[in-house]
Image (cartoon, rainbow, N blue to C red):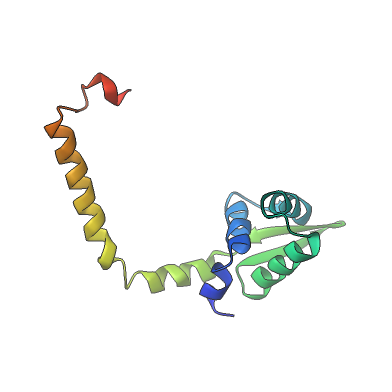
Length: 118
């Protein structure tokens, strides 16, 4: 399965977000995903299987628990592929930052403005 096929599913993206914060037992993943997406334990298990088989996640056995961790290698490959396209939006983001700063100067907002907070 292609990396973007894996990442195209919102459930799998959510599981990867959870794993980005550290390792999780499968039961904890199931609980979060079931609550957020309303899918069965079996469906969550299928998504975990796709992540394992596609190389996005690793699993180890700890007694009766399965502990999942993220594997960054496929994400690094996605990032490398996306690097070819960053030029299309990086300049726009820089231009947006310039316009925001210009707007603040026009309105008299700055670091000393009490509306900007601490």
